[in-house]
Length: 141
Image (cartoon, rainbow, N blue to C red; front, side, top):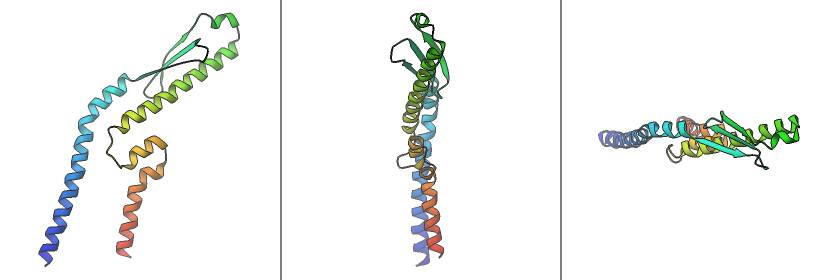
């Protein structure tokens, strides 16, 4: 009887290992493609009046700022500064969302890491480990 239980346990462990390894292989095979897409990602935003254009990369790093000649007619440096800052922030926020969407597409379904990228909730990131420890604690107690 013990041999049957051991075989069943080994079979279940092997199936779980094959599943996890398959997820790892899919993730690993897509990393080069993901890296290239992230390197090429550019997000451009324009101010509401179209006078300021900001382009950022995947991490929200500023790549370029373009000013329409009309911005110099107002001669209000503070207003121009606010407009540039707001436009760059909007571009960085859009880049963050685009990066999260792109990366999430390469993560295994049902993993806390995908939810963490969307929400920033560390509980989602650790949820699976927390559940495993609760189950482990209940099995011992």
